[in-house]
Every structure is written in C-alpha cells, then in structure tokens.
Length: 480
Ligand code: NAD
Image 1 (cartoon, rainbow, N blue to C red):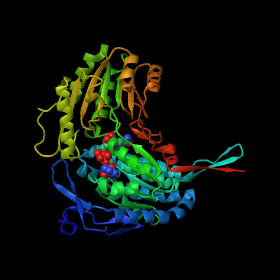
Image 2 (cartoon, helix red, strand yellow):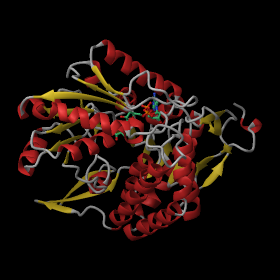
Image 3 (cartoon, rainbow, N blue to C red):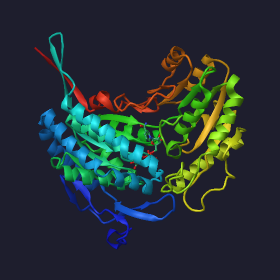
Image 4 (cartoon, rainbow, N blue to C red):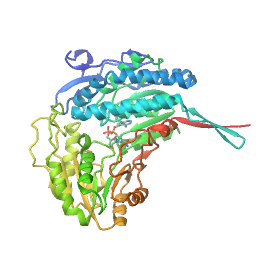
C-alpha cells in the first residue's frame, strides 16, 4: 500500500518516532490495519525497514548515558507526566483496541486501557526508589541499567504488553526501541502521542512499526541492542532467542501457555466454573494466561458440565461496540482459521462437544468463532497440549489430587494456573506443585506488582513489579 494514496478517513499514521520527533520512514511502504469485526481496512502505518531500526537504535544509544545518569526522582517525574498524558487518552485507547483487535468496548476500557495505566503508575513509584545496593563481604553490589532495549510485542493486549516492557525499562534507566505488532499498531501510536506530550528526553523511547521478519529481526539482531524483550508465540520467541544468542546479548521471553484450572472435589463449583469460563474466554480466548484446560474432580464432573453449558449459552458474540457483546472476533482471518482447525482436530480426536462448535450461527462478516467446549479431552491430545488462542476450552476429569497435578504439569508450557478448594491450605499445597509462573487460588485477583512470566517453554525472565525492573539491570560487584 502506498502511504501517499491513503484515503483521509483512515487512521493514517505516516511517521516513526525517533529521537524525540515524528520522522519520515526510509521508504513509503505501508501496512494496512483491519477491523476484524468487519474485515474493513480502517488505518495504516509505515512498514519500517532495517535502516529505520538503525536510526532508532542510534537515537536510543545516544540518549542512554544521559537517561541512565538521571536521578531516580526525575525519571519518576517523567514517567508520572507520561502517565497523565496516557490517562487523558484512555477513551481513545479503548476505542482503538476495540477497532483494531475487536475486544468488546467494556472490556477494552477496563483491561486494555485500564491495566497499562495501573502498571505505569506502579512504575512511577518503582522508578523513584531503585533497587537497593548491597554489601556482600568486601563487595559493594550495585544494579545498573542494562542499556538499549529492543521491545517486540504481540497484538492481544497491545498497550499492556508495550507498557509492561517500556515502563520498567525506562524506570531502570534504559532506553528503548519499540516494535509493536503489525496487526494492532495504532494503539502504540497513542502511547507515542502521550510520549510527545509528556516531553520525555529525545531518544529515550523510539517507535519503529513494521513486520516481524523485517523490523523484528533487525532489532533482535542489532549489535547495539543490549537486551531484547519479546512477547509473542513460542515459535517466534525461539527465533528471537537464536538471533540474540548469536551475539551473546540478553533476552527476556514471554511466550505461550496452556494453563490448567484445577477444581477440587470440595470447591465452590458455581463460582469456579463461572470465573473459569470467564478467564478461558477473556478477549475471545486470545490471552496467554487463559485457563484453557479445565480439570474437574470426577465426583463433580457431571454437575460441572451442566454449569459450563449454561454459562457458555450466556456468551453473546458480535460487534465489539455493542454493549451486549461478550465475545468479539478473533484478530484476523488467519487466526480464526487456525482456531477452527483446532476445533475440527478435536472432533476428529473424539473429544465430546458440549457447547459451541462449527455449526453455531455467527455474524455474517468478521473473523468470529463460537465459544466452544469439549469434554472428556485426553490429556495427551492436541487440544490439551497445543495453545489454541481462541475461545475453546478442554474439560478433563480426574480422580485424585496427584492425578490432577500430573495432568496440569503434563505440558511443555508453564505460564499460569488455578486451584479451587474450600480448604485453602490444600489449594496452596497444590499451587506449590504446579510448574508455572503464576497460580490463582479461588479466583485470587491479578496483582500488577507480582512477577509475571513462565516456566518451561512459556518463557525466560519476569515482567512487572520490582522483578520486572530488575530484568532491565546488570549486577556489578565492586571490591574494596
Ligand atoms: P507472534 O510471535 O506472531 O508475534 C509477536 C511479535 O513478534 C510481533 O510484533 C511480530 O511482528 C514479531 N515477530 C514475528 N516474527 C518475528 C521474527 N522472525 N523476528 C522478530 N520478531 C518477529 O505472536 P502473536 O501472534 O503476535 O501473539 C500471540 C502469541 O503471544 C501467543 O502465543 C501468546 O501466548 C503469546 N503471548 C504471551 C504473553 C506472555 O506474557 N507470556 C502475553 C501475550 C501473548
């Protein structure tokens, strides 16, 4: 698509943000942005090139010494102004995410706009009080910012995933080049409108939109990027890790998941099912931490399946801007096709369809998939092992707690999980046995200060809170 030929009604962004200014990209190619609820093109952004990455990394490198030397209180004041400028755009953020991703507006307002503001607020406070220096024997151990950070983010929580990297990196004293997902780049532009308004020092944070194979790879392979922080699929994470390994730089990976929700025999079943379904289908199931395997004690299995069918029947699929909509479309035609493929495969593998499926009527346009639940799913089957990233839930019975833990841990992923039991000590004992980075007991609330990340192929490193800031530091030992 030629940038100059774009119709004015589109959300057209023509620039990169480099060294504190909106600048022209090296060439005029553009990436169209689609509304997945209708299939219409609603915007476009430049398709960045390796030359654009070079320029942005040079700007970040030039800004690094000054930003790293800036007093913590001053860095916090900059982040505070950024928070105010972003908060002023909360409504625009929610609308933009509803438009380019299809998240229902109510959820987009609460989570897609609200959560990044909460995280940024936490980073204002953490920037003001950097990690304490330690004395170990005759050594003074200090933490220093790692340097220039390349941030590569996915489309499913397009602002949250950006802020979860950019804010702690800036708080730690690093400078950043961001490449947002090419499927949802418009939300990142709102962040950079806020960056401009907040008057952050030039080059501290830079934006190069573009595709993964071009801009993502150029950033991951760039010799002057000290740490690559990546969120996305495990397959792409592996590729990014290879590129970074070739030049022995630092890498942080937040990848996929296949999280298990364990409902023990003594659980409050109606609540556990209601919250479990809500979690599995959040953002049309396009959530890395989604509890996509529901493990239920056999004594409560039949009762649980009835509750599940009733809960799923209340999910309305449709226009993200309609207040009655619970489930929007999937992000793209390709994603919807992939999810339908998983449903077909589960049917072929003999899983029992208890809700949804391929025959449910859907809106005539857009990339919709019906919320779908399979029971009696074999723990080794593709549906129980592969990340679907759509509104598809696998229900699996178990006979005792040991078996439940074994099924839960029978995964190459280890991102999240949940346990429900009337006996909190029992739930805690089970939580300790799960090989995952987070576990929620009886619906425990998301904590933006808690470390977030995965075991096994769900990733390397942690985001959010003090652990998230430490990710962007190097340790130095000074002997005296
Ligand atoms: P993706 O891996 O396709 O893309 C993620 C980002 O990587 C995008 O910006 C993309 O342009 C870029 N990219 C693609 N190919 C690249 C390459 N060769 N080199 C460098 N960059 C490249 O993932 P997605 O489809 O955007 O997101 C969905 C995936 O993200 C799911 O697997 C989900 O589980 C995962 N995810 C994980 C977390 C977490 O915190 N663990 C959070 C959200 C999403």
